Image (cartoon, rainbow, N blue to C red; front, side, top):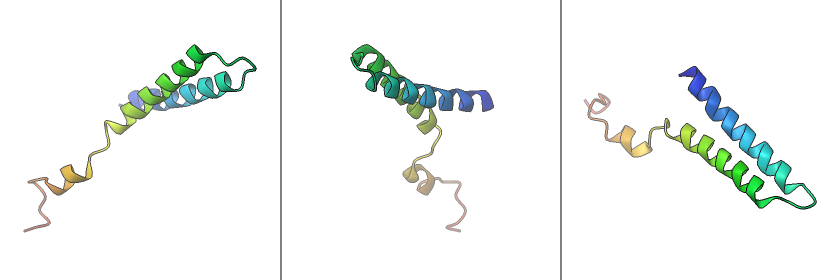
Length: 67
């Protein structure tokens, strides 16, 4: 699981670097910019999959706070 977490952060970092590099060129390459944004979004999506929603925590039937 630690390797998966590292891959997520590497995707985010690599995507941001590629997008910024493509944007700062004299003749920006749209394909390179889109590729960087795609890498960034994939990394963010993979990280956000593991964050539980607030509603899921409130509706948990195993929650013993109500008893």
